[in-house]
Amino acid sequence: MALQLRPAWLGRLAEARRGLGGRAAGERLARWVREVQGWLPAGLGPIARKEFMDLITSWRMGILAALLTVTGIASLYVTGMAIRSAAGVLEDEGYIFLKIFTASDGRLPPFTAFVGFLAPLLGLALGFDAISGEQNRRTLSRLLAQPIHRDAVLVGKFVAGVGAVGAMLLALGMAVGGLGLILIGVPPTGDELLRLLAFVLTTVLYVAFWLALAILLSVVFRHSATSALAGIGIWLFFAAFWDLLADLVVGTLIPDTGSLRHAQVRTWVGRLSPVTLYTEAVVTLLTPTVRVLGPILLEQAIGALKGTLPIGQSLLLITPHLIGLLAGTVVCFAASYVLFMRREIRA
Image 1 (tube, rainbow, N blue to C red):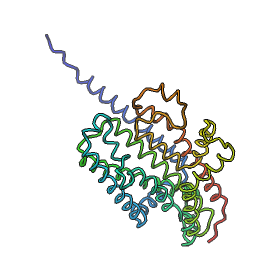
Image 2 (image 1 turned 90 degrees about the horizontal axis):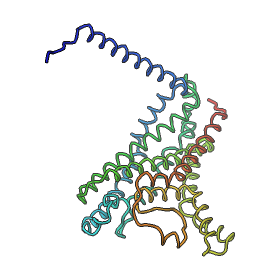
Image 3 (image 1 turned 180 degrees about the horizontal axis):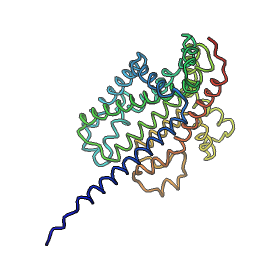
């Protein structure tokens, strides 16, 4: 068979076309970047970078990260040793790697309980003095005297806070997962890795809600101590007293505690709390055997088939919870945005 040599001019033409195509793609990308930058408020990038570095290197971030790490590793070690001794029994159940995050031997709460308890404190600590602290230090007027938009200050602080929280939680999740792998010696499956990633993203959204609430309080109150106390009070109300109040209200409206109507209304009222939304979402993600949230009839329970849900179905099950957390975050941030844009700031 004779070799068919490609003419040199065809090669040069192909290279020219590739060069023109790459140059055109680069120009389109640059044009798109310029358009996106035109939509964003002026000065957002520098403020977000500066706030991100300040948060990452701050003492409050280091203390909260150390607290989460110590409590998480302690709980993980105790649970991991218990799972390691019973690995033969748990092997038939599957999802052994996820159990180090959700199981407990009774001495310490599971890792998810520590994260759910400390995550609101993380968001409140990063945002309680976002605006009031600038006012108390008399730096807000000097900051706004620069050629930046006023909304860039608020948006930059929120974006930096979410970025810092995401980086910390991702690093913590990788460290805890690595320690769990060493303890139990069972590698995670692909479905387990996706569930853990969804757990981290859900936690970031949960912290973002409390961060937006803290920023709102820092705009409403002029003193950082007042905004911090208000944020802690709201967190304690939802964490400790909301369930008691829900039981009291629903029990008064529907005295028959054994009826299906009472159980349904109690579930709906309980889900008005962000703590309940986050708890149910995490349980559904990290416990694949959870197939339904809320009360069900006995006939439905008898006819249901035992098994686990794939990650897609679990995400579909908690979609209303994620939408609720996102809606709360948007409402809090929008309220702080409107109040901050209308506030008169004097030197």
